[in-house]
Length: 126
Image 1 (cartoon, one colour):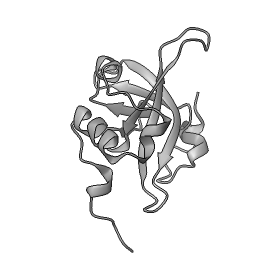
Image 2: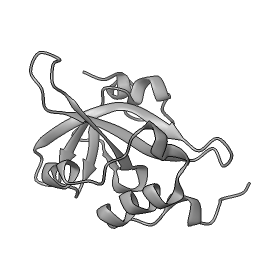
Image 3: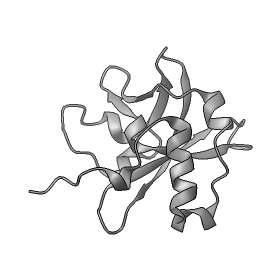
């Protein structure tokens, strides 16, 4: 169980606690868990949650970057819910370590999932 469930009434969560948090389809089916987060260095925004799914006994897992905007935290499930299906994850555009600096590759991922590009959203300023 992820540490994200330790303090369910708090609005803020440590990135350490997000790792391992389950990810569910809208029908409540568990599709994987959060492996780690990718944060835009300049804006400070969480851009992606890398989702791990599949495998057996820790072997054969697949990892896919899912735009952070595609996840909503569900207190009752103590996990994140997404309308994105496991098949959509499997059919996602290839996204390797070299892709992180390529906006066209990132834009293809966002388009595939039907969510706005995180870098085009208005920044919230204090």
